[in-house]
Image (cartoon, rainbow, N blue to C red; front, side, top):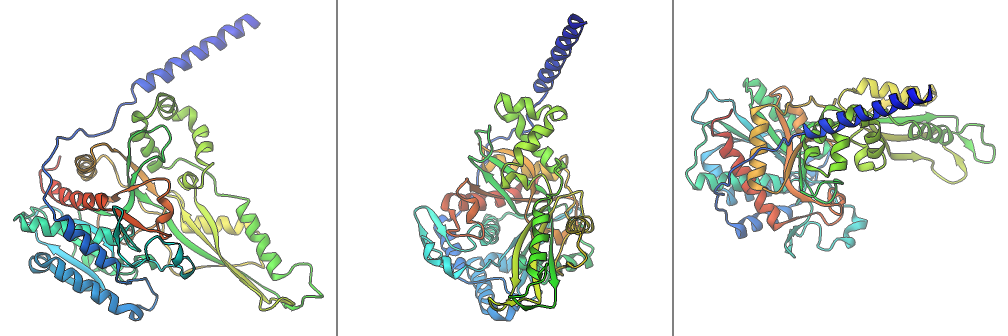
Length: 489
């Protein structure tokens, strides 16, 4: 019996080993081989100066647009001065309060247009952190090989890189075969309701059907993905949904010397503790699986064994990813308490306590299912749960086996030859969610290099872009336009 069992065990292990090795051997590269191409000539000094001046304008997102309308007007005026041919040869429309839509009419109206997107607004700077910036947050200073300030990464560099690219193409007498739209929102950071949503509605009313959309999103990551020596250019083929819920508890209040068994604060904090102790379940969504299918063949052998055999090792991969907040967000719907309010003084029991929790919902789940899960975990009818008005479902997942994705893939290799290209899930939200009815091909990518120390610069201190990266962004958009106007497979 023991010998028979041992023999069977050895045989099973041997078969398993053979299966693992065969699958590693068939784990072929998904990278597109491209020939070197002649890049468009651009004026680096002028481009730096334009972006620097744009950063100095405080186009901060506000719920009352009139409060800083002058900053957007000044930004539009800068665009007219910096890009005269764009304003002369493309059709410009103002949409909403301060958003812009440019139309570059193509020669062949049978071809579906493409849409390049970015947003002009920025998040505020916390006044208590201003002294921690190496260069003032709205200085636009060019120093140490970088352009510094709010909007350098998110997202004025996209706006101006697109316009620099189009201006240069116009100067070289390039004329597109297909129509190209440029859409620049002014309120992305607060939901895009008056900007991107209205531009999308305008295009929809004109029955526009797009070939694809390219918006901001993921970047070129270095030193972040274990087992990969090359930079990883990750293209967001989907983004998480967005939902904020207000939790509130109301009681009679009273004197703090005679507290009831459950105070408003105690009940509320108990609900928050239960939520944080019961995270949403983990799973490898299609975008995340796709990321590993593209990255895996380029990684070290031990990583290849795991990623080529997710049928066996997916639980191990999920446990590994869950150990870091950065990668845990790829696995599940996340929930984070972000605001808390209760009490008026130290010796009075508050009659009301409230908190806000922000959820980022993974594709495959929904606002309804996420809200229901929160209710089930809290399991307390005294806690009122109300959604914020601005919310969005998780996006659809764009297909990587399309001509549009291939063009984007090719363009990245032409402008960043060392990079490994892969689809991925964007855990944040972008204006592209408002355009989902216009095309199935929505891609979220910007060729800015991001290392471990750079991730916190988004919405944080010392936001900056290297001069080299900014020049590459301009060349990327120019080459993307050229490639979309060549025959597509």
